[in-house]
Image 1 (cartoon, rainbow, N blue to C red):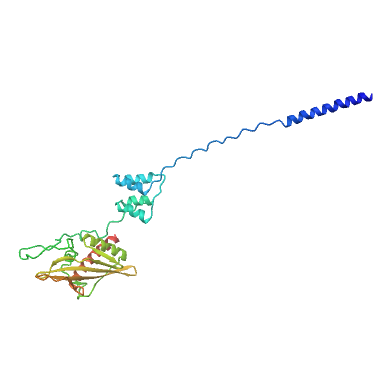
Image 2: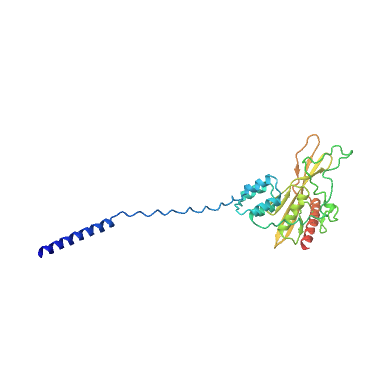
Length: 293
């Protein structure tokens, strides 16, 4: 009986060992590695158009495109990268691109400049630009400067003030300026004077509140002598309204066998100052009337 029990225990032990071996073998069996996840390709970025730049504007202009076509191209571009620095804008202005095109580059509405306020028939007069050569004056020559200066000889043709040598009934002495009060702002007076000088083809320069013309109106003033005039106009700000001070200087060149250099009178000439001031007074009055409409 005892021997039978031992046999059963032995068989049970063997079964236990065998079952454990099977479990261990299954547990240690290599597991297949999971398949690597494949990444979906990144969606391709939508291609952006190349930026529309100053160089493109210059190319269109050089190719002969009209102002309207260039503006349309700028407005239609979805990607713009303009150089709006001073150098960039100067480069556009250097090829004479219009203000409308430059405004489109800046992305601003175009506001054309108003017409000059003194562009009136009373100013636009027709006179000879040089003295007339006659048989009685064989030595008379056209102005040697090669420019038109029909300025100080025109005072009698503007505003009905022919040969005027007075301002407001007062005769001017040499060295005395003519004073013209206005109701215009200084900037409006300066702009009017610039347009006036340019309409007469007169060279001028602006220094602060002064506008000075170059020497001009070359003419005969005596036997063998030549004279030229130069105007100095000062625009003074009196609480927003400009007062204009005018002086006209003269220089003389004596001819003859031994030609002498130009000699400038130290004081302004009263008669020339009054004549030119009368002309400017008419121009400024016309500008005032235009602005008040």
